[in-house]
Amino acid sequence: MPPVDRLVCRFAAEPPQEGLPYGRWADRLRVEFLGACLRIDDEGEDLGEAGDIVWYPDRSWDGQTFVPATTLTSTGYELYGYVAYPLPAEGEEPADFTATAEFTAETADANPDWKLDLCEEVVGGWRGEAGATAAMTLVWGRPMIPAGAVATAELAGLAVDQCTLLEDRFTLLAPDAYRGDVLDIKLFDARGAELASESLYEEDDEDDEDDDDQGDGGSANGNAEGARGA
Image 1 (spheres, rainbow, N blue to C red):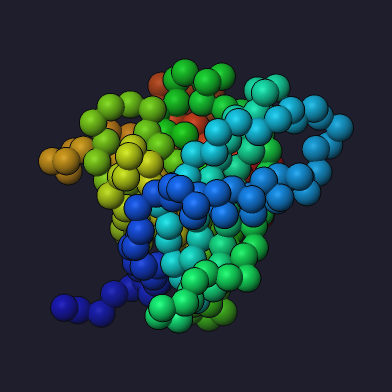
Image 2 (cartoon, rainbow, N blue to C red):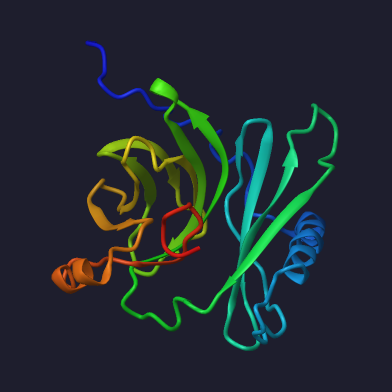
């Protein structure tokens, strides 16, 4: 193959290695995630009580495993974040957990036009050409339309990660905000037909007016610097 003109890491994270958490393992992760929820700066809002936690497929990168989560609260907010832990040695149990959580009022229930319900968090960086750095971004979510089978992350039209849906949920970990390019999250059916596409970055109001007929989904939880008002 000829040399490529864009050097960027692709499929850097391990595919999901476990099923969705359940039983005692889910209880352990729940303690960590709810602890992070208690540390959220609520900005004077009444976040209410957390409901049932929805877990998403695990992804491992740079020696860490990330297990994302979301939950709706009794006052209509969504809490979202992840539990992380170092990859344990063979035969050992996970330990040294860390967790992060944020909140948003932009929920799928309040936005019936969404085709994708996404959350994201920058978890590290990848240094590329001429000192340019990509934001390694954990993206997790679920389709709001039927027939989805695989989710992908694309950077400048190049697939940099993908995840087979597990119980209608997916997790991606991919380079974002690199050399002026940003991630697009796409949903495909089992035959490879594209069903939905969404950028992690909101367009400005003027662009929104021009592109009202082109929006495919919702991604309320922007975290990358310069993105959607994180």
